[in-house]
Length: 151
Image (cartoon, one colour):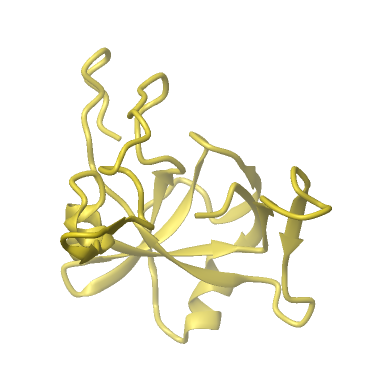
């Protein structure tokens, strides 16, 4: 998962890049965004047999909610008794990994550097020859127990 990303594109450009007609269910046809956790941005989902552009929130949890960092949230766990544990076996990730896939259009994305002399800095990734990249994404639908809002 990237830390944050940018997107500068138009819905017709997304359709042209993918070579398919996308149904736009959003209220925008053009985006110029810097998306941080909990920000909203377009994603491409399959609705029945029609790929569509929808707005999703960039986070797996509603704002203010926390999941303790445990084996249930980790994706890189090794158990000596069971061996490698796959993401779809973790309660937090199971449903999304198995059933809820999306394409996330980005112009660039940022990822922190965790080790070495540049630890703590962010690195930007983009392709100067392509104004939009598509990242594989997963999503889940949850209800904020405080507000009742669907995320």
